[in-house]
Image 1: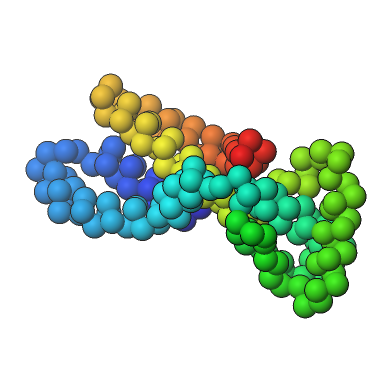
Image 2: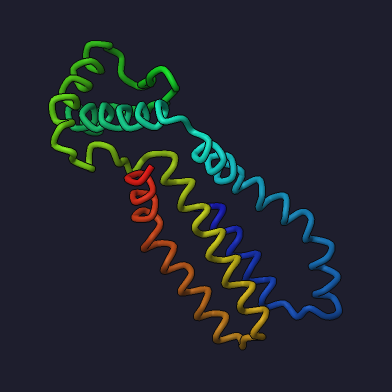
Length: 185
């Protein structure tokens, strides 16, 4: 979310500060620094996007197995544990659970319910891909809006309305988009 907020501030300044005189000098001076900060804040988006498209089928399947196992661990322990995982080509790892038996039991429970094709087992709101997807969604949404607002030389009120709509779309759609991508991957 911090990447979206920083980019929103940068876009707002870019759209509201006049491009002549001091505004142009400040913009040209700060642009390289802002560019590197934006790339740095969104680096996880770009690297995950690359990895997602190059991820092997085995790793995708193991990622789903990881999510299912974590789902049942959270169902069993609730907020008592802080659990995470990482999928590999040959399997997956679970962190945050001290007993191997608990992980095996959660995986066995997942395997029993796997045949029901319950998407809740495979989709996790806490998955890193959801966070990265929302970051990328915000970046793309704001970039397209900024480009359109600059081309059509919009007024201050129109800019404010479009930026407010961007924030609303970001908040409303970021989790649903991440879940949709997880379901399709």
